[in-house]
Image 1 (tube, one colour):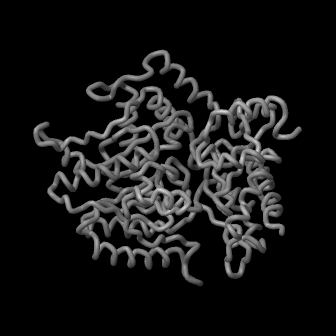
Image 2 (image 1 turned 90 degrees about the vertical axis):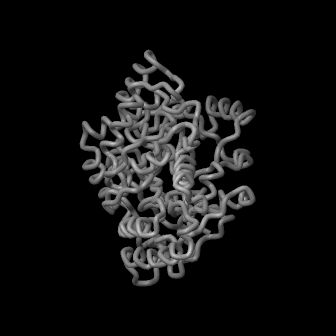
Image 3 (image 1 turned 135 degrees about the vertical axis):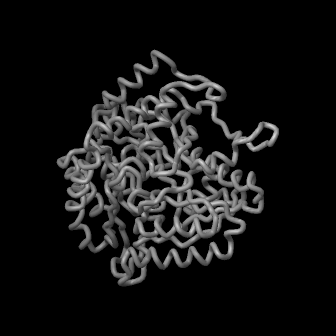
Length: 454
């Protein structure tokens, strides 16, 4: 059976007549088949012709507890029979109240207020605007800029893209964007020879200090993806950087925005990545796994101090007027509550550590591969860096699309692997078994062998 048999081909043809897909050059589908998925079961996706694909990337990092998870599905169905949506301006409902209470309970200390939005990019917009507006309300309108890390990615809306530094996404829209102040990433892969991850983090903190000495007076916040810069190539760094960042933000009176949209909810081995540095940000942005992959929802958690800067008589003009029509959607809130309940009821993090150890053991042999420059891992996120030359770490030419070869090999052998350029990564749902990890890694290794030839 090929990927373009009867039902698949029919659905793909209908799709290509009208739909425009995200992060896709649609011309590719003249030669690369569209894969129509009709249902999901645990870590698996099933297409219209019955072919199964092991979801090695949790469907863009969203799915935690498996596709069509019966517990989450039942909570969604029950809520749909009660209240599907209501305006969140001047109205409220129990799912949103309970969700805010639970997020405050489980998040790093000091985060006491919850602002709900629709998706990850929206959460970043909220945090950026809220930080700027906070300083404006306090009489510091000169603070209009943000510091971001080189290689960072925070979303596709204009504000989120403004604090991103992945050329593939940013370059085209640069004339429309704010200009961030870029601090060198503490990425362990980019360290000097012999430098430990902790030493790299310390050196980069020194460089960040210099930037803050120059720019703190005009800076609202420093925004980072804690521990893993995901879309930038799964770049990983030492938690000591977060510890130092928190101290620098306090010293120079700028906010610390933690974008845990991809790394939150157990991905890095702790519920939140910031826990590994024992720090609390001023803004914590959450989405993706918040609903277990069922519905779009995001949340921005912030402090009592930030909330107080907006709390005034209406005539003072200090209200935060950012809004979304589907803010606090009851269906999404109820699904999020059920997702968080699974963490509370089951030993998810402990089980993930066993899975992560098994994944690490299976990937270890790739460290000696002549075209692998790095194998890195942070909890349930692992990445393999493919290069043309191991000694110099010279990358393959981007136009060769070696990662695409791994993707296509995966589809042909029942695995969904979607590399970031030439970085093959693994971010499976938490319900994956060790046997499924074996299968996923075996397919990836064979795909890598195929990709690096000639």
